[in-house]
Image (cartoon, rainbow, N blue to C red; front, side):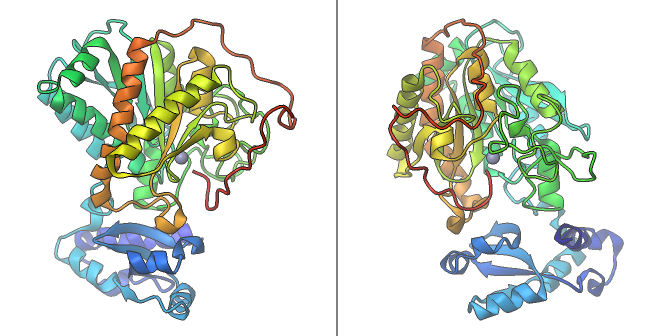
Length: 440
Ligand SMILES: [Zn+2]
């Protein structure tokens, strides 16, 4: 219900200028756009209230609040500013919210434009490829960076993915900025030049474009794709739809279509995961990072079981090195460990699948902030650059590692079929870190 109300309000705000309608037409009788200072938001721990958040800008968090929620904020002594009239006025002056509702974050169209610009400005080094099409017929783009990027030379490849989950906007920006960094520093940095010449670096900033657009324009907290499910609900969790240990149990994914971790009707049932599969299987991929948010974690397989993956110690060592490099930039601590133990069980996710088919070091990085009290799925636009900067040395390191380490070409790893089995008693007992807040 909230989604419908909010959609009406936001669409009204965006559309007012074009329609020339009076301001009162958009004032939803059940909600107002308000803003609160981010410091107040954090101090009062409002992240726990599951408010209908819109965006963050200039130190303020914008949200849609019902009269009841405004009363709750007042009771918590949180100062809120009603923004609806100001936004409507801006819309009336032609300052439509349409170009600004996602601020410095990329929409699907903005990403396409920026990828094409990189390709234009760096001929020979950058090649934009369409690797698939979403349910709503949006293109899924990959940026390939290599010497002679237009021709596939079979060089060692690495893959950086973003935005499996629609509301995790920062996960688009980090892989995109890595691509831009490589291209802009190719001429001036020996390290970058050596790396790019020796490898193929593939970057897919938006795996789930339909979900992202829905998150930008309709419901900021949307997570899944926009599959119309048989029971009338929408969305498959594309990070539970990969074909290894798919549906292994009902903890790491759900068979209930309305769930935020719905795995879909079959492995790779979704065009978004099929696109990644097609890209990955056709090349010599030796490493992968799939970016998500939030919680500042570096997670490695397995996610589907608390049993260690073959080569577990190697995955741990690489993660430790990456965490050290990341902390060295500005002190941000990224915890690292096996996904199922450090965060929670997941089955059918990207990293497990990639590791199962290639034994390529495969990571999920949960970007900042560290928890819901520090913003959850929201990062201030001004933090984008710093978050990329602290991830960059780890991305360079993993790329170098991949170039230097051919993979053991083994058969695909088997799934352990026992379900619900407790971890082997010989392993150290790990007390899972509490993971409050929504799935990410
Ligand atoms: Zn995620």
